[in-house]
Length: 188
Image (tube, rainbow, N blue to C red; front, side, top):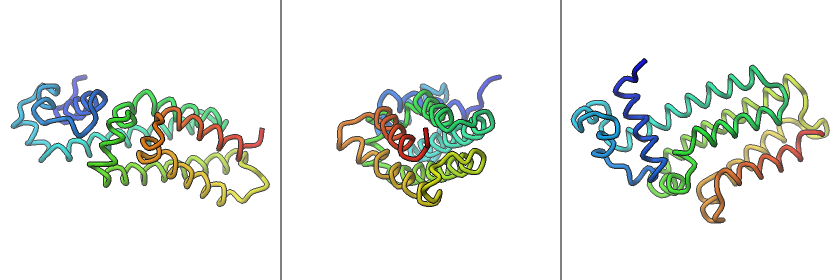
């Protein structure tokens, strides 16, 4: 099945931003990569920022689907977290590479806020699922407090400012944070 024009443009944006970040993508090379004319590109998107936002929206929709798939197939919190992180590291490279992270911070902070709100909603849903279905969160601490601490930790650590300022990678930061949170809130 062939992709429609809009999908081809979004895939081209992912490919280009994986290599050079969002800010360095230009409409001409985007059109070439998508195999369309610039005129056609502008018929679908009014500008580069609209392409970037559509690309991020498509990815967030894919992540939401993957979250649902994992929650239906896995019950163990460590496997749920591992599956989600692996999906993000494999399919989200166009977002989590250092250049794209920096671009979100400097040039598209409103798009980062959109991503942040999406991920907070997904994390909240995953934590609710884990606690409701398995009751595996710490029995000594109110699940509402655990959820608030985990959400605040993710916001404080897995963001462009923290990752870039501390010269870390998104992947390593996410792995270490998930180890810390799992050891703190999921009984062994």
